[in-house]
Image (cartoon, rainbow, N blue to C red; front, side, top):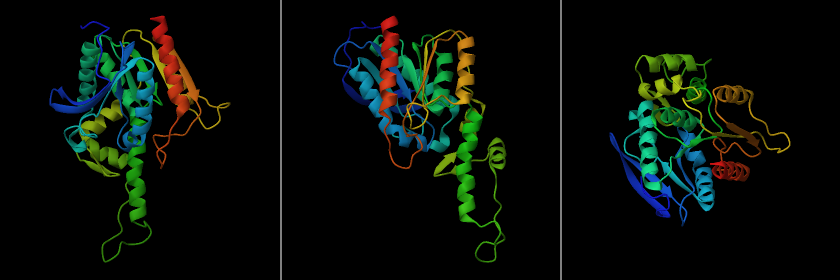
Length: 294
């Protein structure tokens, strides 16, 4: 492993070689030696695009505080090779593991894995494969992949409802369309069919991994920074009940979990691109505290 004091490029965009192709990656690093490193794992489907602004703001703030940050587009996403229809869950986990290994060898630090929403599920699975992970930074983590999948499929249900009035026949002589619910779509995926949802072609190999994913404690104790956006009022911002239960499970498994809710917009799902400065500030403060203790 190179000297920890070796300087990295301040900003570099490149194609990271993985087992089955290349993934677009952006490395940001401080001018001097990095105090630590992170790999950013983006959310699922359209949440990725809604969150790009916040991910960039978070990365820049961390770099300003001395961290190196590597962000990559997973297979079939953004500027990486492949189509979303061809992506697999295990392929995404592989992408993150390769990125973490690359960053460790170039930055001289075992990296933190920084996930957002469903990216937290991918990050946790990747952490299981890696020999050394400094910690997990979880932004608004999805606790249940199964629930997340069904929420995504509801977009298709809603689109079908808008396209067809279930009480009236379609225009012309065709019979009324059937309004499938999420359970029916899940069964289609399990039977090997692809589903079109909000402009994304969802294949069984990706859906099955998401459906099975749970935010469960990894092997070996490691620090976890768990941050959520808990409403617009700082005085009442709170972790969700599901997160509170999951955090207790992580702590029972020996992990030191620094959990906090901040006030701000749900930027990953708002119609317009939103910023949440309180989340960025809480992130920098939490990681600086961990760096000071290590």
